[in-house]
Image (tube, rainbow, N blue to C red; front, side, top):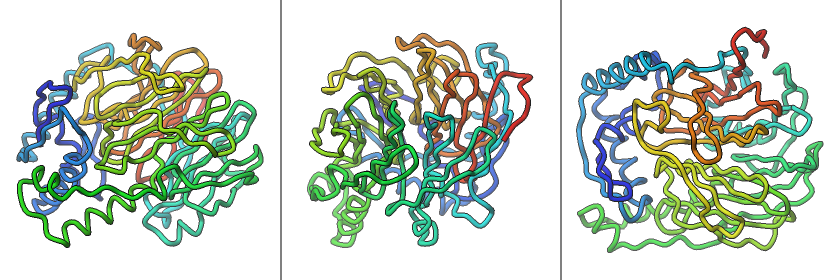
Length: 413
């Protein structure tokens, strides 16, 4: 597929990582990039599926057309990019892996860990429960891990958690499956509510869809499309709290974009403050601090900041598949964290998977970590310790959290 974002044409290969990976199989080396399936049927199915999502969701300024790129050409491109990064000192990470926290066992669903965050006491709060498994849905919970990476508690939830954040006083907020929950610091549910869009009707414009796809859509096509929107509106890809405000990312009711809603801490009085965010593959992460909301606007390769009313205050970021100070891949960065040192930490699902450090104004301050695993266009949740000395990143599909620290730090987890 090929797109223009903000009216700026980009090479078709920029978008290939989104659609070229088969849904299963061992990852390849990060040096050569992830392995790409040679199965043409999977390639065509994934192309159609991602085209449906991205066509419907990117809005004005994005035009998509089908394309083909051979496995060999793509893999050679990845190798060339890896060589360029290896020769660039700006790509040298400041940390190394010092531990791994395994959240689930071998029998767990591959997508059971959706997100996590640090509690005020330093424990990791991990969202557990994959959307596609009845077993893991029944086990929906927050799994609590101590600083040594050992599970010490499990907080049962009535719905599958997808996003989580913690207020300064230790209050925990969790969202997922169309529900929001407010918990005390020990995991007791204090309040619950539906997400702002859970009961809204989805919009389906048959004429507009047929114009975009260039063909007549059958009743079965429209039914499948409607079903996907109905299921999607229950997603909660992002959650953040600052002061007296809780911010919730919800899918748009028309197409596949995203909006941000502001609520009070009792999960009441929702107000839509940001509309039309372009997110790829179900991802739209947010963070909040000191009255300012930060958005990982992955569909625009930008980090954006807003006030509580939704007024854009600033942004930074550009697309470049080789430059360390830019965001590569089809849609990055995927996730953010705001450090106590004032820096903004951005994670990319790659290739390569990475954590980068920026000033609030967007000045590049280095590559923090280059995890040695490959993944697709997915969430790569990160977290930063209170002293900004330890970094955590989700390894999607493995139900694992990798831990990074300065070189020479003792192994843990």
